[in-house]
Structures are given as structure tokens and as C-alpha cells.
Amino acid sequence: QVQLVESGGGLVQAGGSLRLSCAASGRTFSGYVMGWFRQAPGKEREFVAAIRWSDTNTYYADSVKGRFTISRDNAKNTVYLQMNSLKPEDTAVYYCAARYYGDSGGYSSYKSYNYWGQGTQVTVSS
Image (cartoon, rainbow, N blue to C red; front, side, top):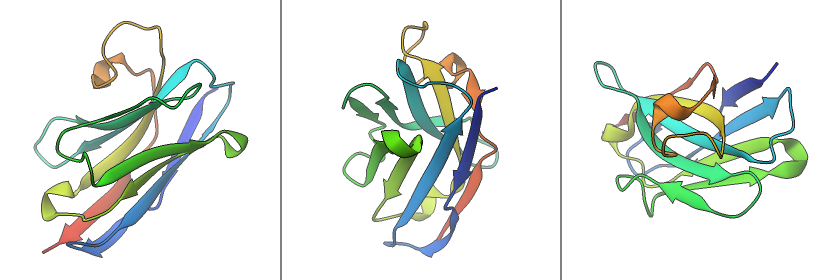
């Protein structure tokens, strides 16, 4: 059974940094895409970043490009989201998700992901 467990959220001032972690277990993830999404109150879940487990390809939402970096540690089966220059509008619950890379739908579509973590709250104060 696939499990995704996020950690690293918290409260930070605008301009600060946080690093989120997503520990994945339950299967071999080669051939999978790992994504980060976020959801603010009253808003739809939105794509943040994605990375393919088997190569170095990464994908970012325009709103976080140049500020956030997604990476992975294959040995630890963990995906990270380094968030720098945080803004109040980055406040949301952040979710880790996984899907097989060959499944239909773009990597930025939350509906194309099969597995989800429980989420971790990130709050950026102004």
C-alpha cells in the first residue's frame, strides 16, 4: 500500500524559507512522477511542482518558478520542496502526490494523481 507522509510545514515570515519533505513507501517508485500541490481556503487545489523519479526532469508552476526547487533522494525514497522567498500568497496546505508517468493527464493536473499524502500547513506572515 502506497503511503506518502509530508513534513516540514510551519509558520514563517515573508521572505523566509521552508523545506518540505515527502517520505514515500509501499512500492518501487521508478517510473512514477511525484508532485507537490497546494490548497488555500476556498480555492481549488493547484499545482506547484513535479519531478520524475527516474530522471532529472522537473516542472514548476509559473507562480513559484525561481523560488521553489523540487528534488528527490532515491536512497531515502523522499521528495523535497525547498521554498525560498516565501510570500503570504504561498500560504496553503501543501500535499505530496504520486502517479505513474504514463497515465493520462498532464503532470500539473491534480486529477491525474492516484496517491496523496495528508498535507502539511504552510503559513507565511506579512
